[in-house]
Length: 400
Image (cartoon, rainbow, N blue to C red; front, side, top):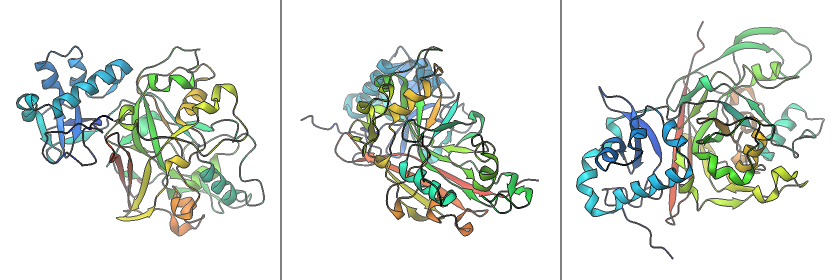
């Protein structure tokens, strides 16, 4: 058994941001340009000057304003850089070089970590999909016939993906007064049913060729890491517009992601088998790809934890979502983001949206001034737990 490495960084050992985590982000200090850093404890390591001093071949990628250049270098470089950073933070002889470039989190501004190329949101939780079906179609089957045959998704807007902490302006749009009915007045105005969706996001590092599907076994060659993600949803706007096509204005106004991108290697101890798939998926969605992640989520509204959805309960796996996303030949680009869809478990206190938590009750949705935070944790490779980047957003009133 390998002995876990111990960091010399004060306060980091045993924390949720120990050396078995090391998420990447983009930060700046007053008067300076944004650049790439890595989190250790409550500090950010400024990678650019350290990489330049050690004449690292890829030192230039840490001077960029996003993680895209680093992510595009591919899996081998990603692993090599992680080993290098781990050595910097655990080997005492490196301390004199590194310590001057450790910056307290309180002294930096964090930025959107990735220039998002495309954004796709899936619908991969059977519990969430079933709950929504029962709410909107109480007299019909909860799941539509295709749901267990393919990962259902929709194509969202990359330009409205924002960093944690960005205010969320209440969207306006068309809605029917009696949502879900076939009669009722159609009006325009601010959404009255503003909701959240607790999700995970997967960030693509290496792209693919147009016309060439990506096999599920190649997931780790293309996906760089994970972010926490809140896909804000205007349920009244969505309910009126999404038949017969998919979500549009009810979804496209804002999607929040965490400042920190957790690299896949930090989650090596978190992979688990999913609960099971029946019927057996088609070969390109092979059952061998049905591996999920043991990630716990907390949904916090105005300081109170209202739900704890478990990602391990999902039906479709990350590798299956990626395989389905590209099976028609659609290409990947560096910075592509695909999300899990709402994470909901089988229990009442494991639901990942206010629609489900309130079972359609109007009073369950967000009011102006409400603040939502999503927190994530997973088993770490050193035997403890690591934290993924949290996601926060406060609702502001609609603008005229």
